[in-house]
Amino acid sequence: MLIDIDGASVYAYTGGKRFDASLPVVAFVHGAQNDHSVWILQSRYLAHHGYAVLALDLPGHGRSAGPQLTSIEAIADWTLRVIAATGAAGGIRSATIVGHSMGSLVAIEAAARSAKIDTPIRVDRIVAIASAYPMQVSDALLQATAHDEPRAIEMVSLWSSEQSHGGFSQKPASPGPGFGVVWGNRRLMERQAAGVMHADFVACNAYRDGEAAARGVACPALFILGERDGMTPSRSGKALAALVKDATVIELPKVGHAVMAEAPDATLDAIRAFLAGRRP
Image 1 (tube, one colour):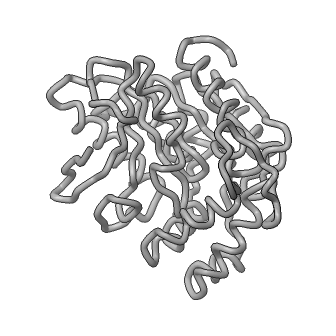
Image 2 (image 1 turned 45 degrees about the vertical axis):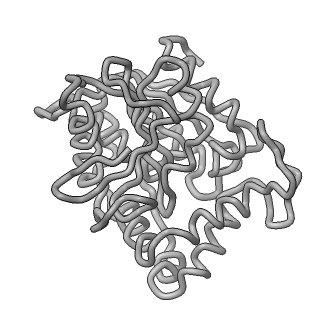
């Protein structure tokens, strides 16, 4: 589905179902150098089981037009505006936001803003996957994103997954010939536009309001963390979750940063239970 925001085209995957604003809305926000496709299993399942799904491509990512947004705060405001614009005719008043990595900071920031200022949408739940604060980026990686993007992709590929480059033994719910989490994630990063990676990592590194935002979240929150996450260590995710008034934390064993790909069923099961009002 294409949505017009300020004259720019925004792409949202709706899970293979027509978007129905009368259903509970779940918006998915991807991480740095990614797009909506990281949510295919989770978004498609929810779309076919009673939810209105918006798996967004952020500006300049995937199928969405640019320009890119350069801060977590700007992305949070944009996300709330997109959800409101999508449901303008259907009267959407609230939504759940699910975010991965950079997207998890967006979900937290959007929820905090929704609780304290007049925003177009109320955030009634958030799911923060592979989250951490501060989400610092090493100088070496920042330099690589600016001047040697193939090298940066190589670095992130090695750090993002519990698997090594030779690891084709990972078996999520739907393995196929030649399947490999690391290689799939690498190809996804390679297909993003030039400059996206640097802007995303700078936004993560520059974000300074994470603690205040976490304390300002008034809705229930679910944190899904990978035990072996080398990009956003689970200890940092747990510390961030401790600042949220109503937070549940799940740590998935033997899982790295690419949580939705490495543990797709466990991720979906946790989200389903949380949306149904149960403690996963």
